[in-house]
Image 1 (spheres, helix red, strand yellow):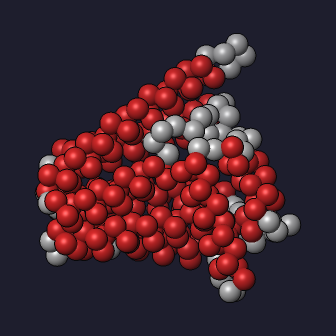
Image 2: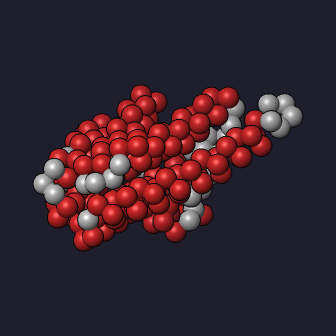
Image 3: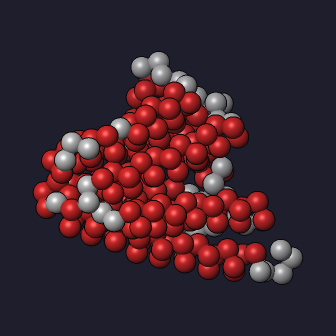
Length: 222
């Protein structure tokens, strides 16, 4: 049965994420999921029902972010807009899957792959705008490791998401958006600062996740 309301959607989202209720999440995460639900529900009313189409659209928008960076620092404003649009599209695909009753395991795999490629595109844009390549690669690696650890721990028996860290995708999206806007205003120094913040936050999130993984998987019976 398709989800018919925010509460219905939240319950279905919770069921597929280890019982974590998005209605009790931090304001950024809760707000992001609520926004995604509203956009997705509106798209369904307009006749858009294919989650994979939203996934593909989000990836294409993300791929255009480093292209804008080639135009110079002022084009970073356009890059920030594209990050926002790509992130919304990426979130909406999950909403469409739940609201229309088309959720699938294969769709979850495509969605995860698209997320990782999108993040790499964002980091490439910062590199093109003046951040050192090692910092862009480092941020990408830590973001990917965050999700890889969660995926492997889930296979090993951890409850689906384990914990909501400070480095969840909505946080990464916000850092990328405001980092690009700051770069447009202040130049390469802002690009470096944005990636430094991204690296610190994602590293902190990874540490949070690793502690949860250790606690859950080292418990008796695991």
